[in-house]
Length: 189
Ligand SMILES: C[S@@+](CC[C@H](N)C(=O)[O-])C[C@H]1O[C@@H](n2cnc3c(N)ncnc32)[C@H](O)[C@@H]1O
Image 1 (cartoon, rainbow, N blue to C red):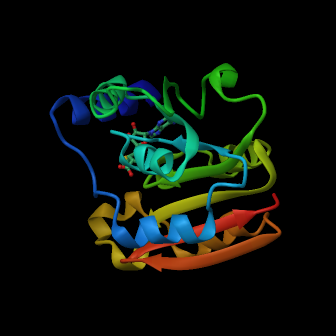
Image 2 (image 1 turned 45 degrees about the vertical axis):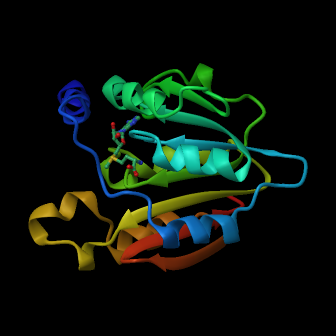
């Protein structure tokens, strides 16, 4: 089953399709809540798709690792990043593959945009990513909410109970609205 899903994502990008573009409000919230630490920082964009968010984080000054399991998405991303200056594009399944390509020194920022609802085991994945945060670091989840999503597309969203479950294992939790998307900032797993 997992390979069918991965193939569907791969076909989506190979057909030239994308997703909701990164919005101005999301950009502003990232710059406000998770600025690059003094002396530089490293970010991880999980489920990066065609890489708009990764390139934005790089423009803020982060060194970025961008992970997706759809190689067609990463092909698009590399075309938009000809210099490959600050982003390492990594093809991997964050739920199943050996994380050997991730940075051993950890991350100041880990972002998951429009991807958490698709994980089969959210708690395990978010816990594991939390262990990769450097002291003072933040994990940001950007997601559609069930209340603002038509029933037939419920699978792309999280409801309040699911958000509460995710937030419950973190010492610090803030929630903002980004033009109808929930923007969750989690610190200290
Ligand atoms: C709705 S798209 C969002 C893409 C991007 N974050 C954005 O905001 O445009 C979800 C992405 O997550 C990727 N994805 C889903 N499950 C994944 C997994 N287990 N490992 C790596 N990437 C995954 C898909 O290939 C797809 O590119």
